[in-house]
Image (cartoon, rainbow, N blue to C red; front, side, top):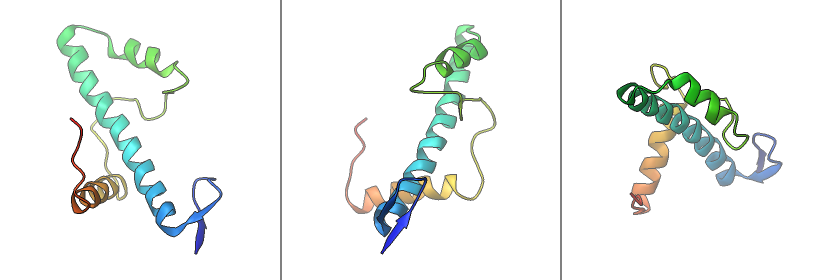
Length: 97
């Protein structure tokens, strides 16, 4: 069975599910990281808006999902992050940190 996801063309079902979950986890990571940077900037006395605008101007990062806020929520982001974590644990993958 082939599916199409995010304009990636037709991919296998497992790859398609992986694309969705990884995409949502990546966006959740950007949100979480920006919130942590906001806390650090506050402690350092740095202007987080200037930092955000500076890193957002880098085309590799962009401005999407780099606004500090209350975190991420909704029905997909938390579920997909947990699903990836659970899958990694089931496959005995250990984080490199």
